[in-house]
Image (cartoon, rainbow over all chains, first blue to last red; front, side, top):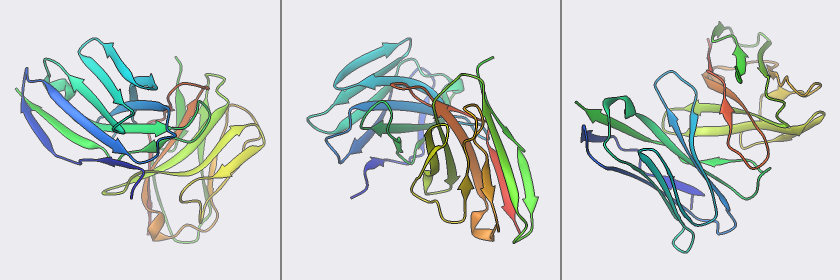
Length: 111
Length: 111
């Protein structure tokens, strides 16, 4: 079983839709959870960083962690064409251990 | 501007010709890492360093070397490149309890 599973998509939605992106992980020892956005031909950029379970909101983005189900989500409200990118989840055990990345979900927001 | 700078951005080389990809960060981060990104395989860690003179293997270290003589620099060395090392490479750095900042990537082609 892979450590982090992420549906590769592609996912195509109309502008203004609510987008839900998800990852599952296998190791209950993971404590830190991240979402990255990667535009074509660019490096990934950090969107959200959360510790343990719960929700974290930043503008149109909400990250949700359910440790009991080993399930993490990223919600994008009022999606825009500029949100079209690949979204990668990442997990790690502690503040100084290597990150384990999902393979990414490609999202297209159609105007 | 806080950033991770890697050079070159694009490189075409021949099998067996030693090359170095440089990486430098200006954020005083302890932790640095090299990833390669391939279609269908996602981001895979090659090597990481938790501080000066401290390096460790990631998931795919074969054929690569690194060094960390100074905190800001973390070069990736391919002593004898082969075509299966054709990939998109990313350098990244982070501070404890936070996510990575990635460089813009180096697209390497080995013929």
